[in-house]
Length: 134
Image 1 (cartoon, helix red, strand yellow):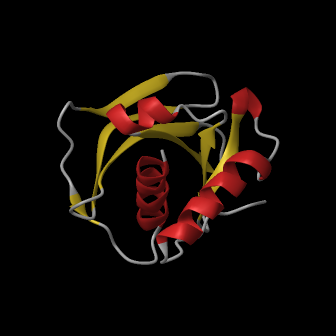
Image 2 (cartoon, rainbow, N blue to C red):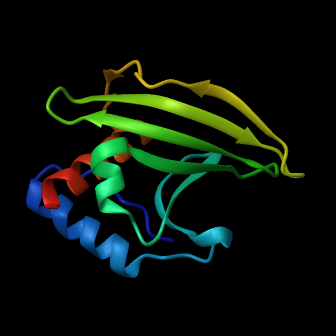
Image 3 (cartoon, rainbow, N blue to C red):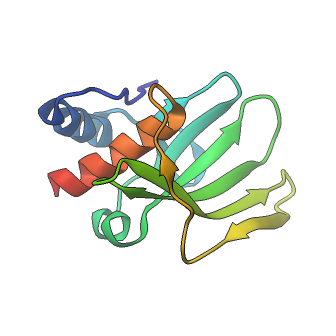
């Protein structure tokens, strides 16, 4: 597995972004195959190929897959790279049988400061690296 860490120099971020997009793929169903973060309870993956223009305009869809139960959640993250804040504008949970439950759907996410050394920081760095790189 390839996990994108949160390096400090921007050039390293760009190199890691390119490497992760091109080479660090794992076999996940439904083309969700680039792992960007992992915790004790969840794996965070994004679709490949990455739609750069979509990320720049709308944010990044991340699939959060629990490690101990079936089903998953789809979360739309939005980053304000200038202010170092991250927000969620959409959150939908899917059960193992395909039933969905939308928990959040907003045009205007509530942004919060990025917590250092967190999953949110990894997602924030990924989005901002895409915006800086392209």
